[in-house]
Image (cartoon, rainbow, N blue to C red; front, side, top):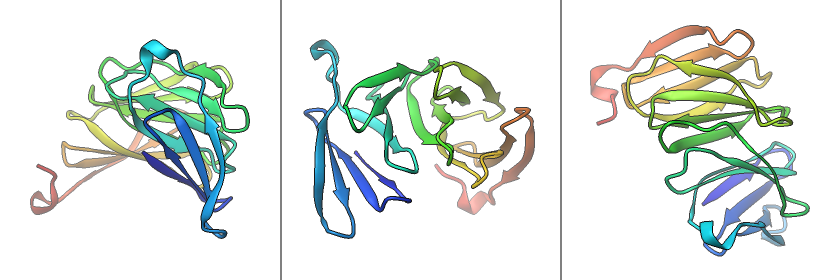
Length: 175
């Protein structure tokens, strides 16, 4: 899997052996390789990964898992596990200030977790099919979720209220 860190012009490639190559886009080379500390029994491929804006943290989820973990890029250590979904995670993203992580799932929900505690601060429900993509606004006060139900929902991250539901035209709907 691959993800990028916009502020540092870095990309992370998570390899099958659980090493993370951190690439410097400007230098066009691998700057560091960090091995994530993972129990041997659970070494499944990474399904979903995301960098914090400053590239100091990585959030990752193993294939077919219902929870994600936050990792330190500097040490390779798992800092904490985040709240679990009912079905596997499909997308994950940090807020720009790296205080929140949003994860979406095949269970049609979005969970927003506090990065420091790992606790779920809100569960956003309203989609009727798998939620496939997430993005925070630049200030982190709004979260957009896209679903295979053909809708994009805008959520307030302070109140968990759905602010707006955008319905895609029938010729643009997935599947």
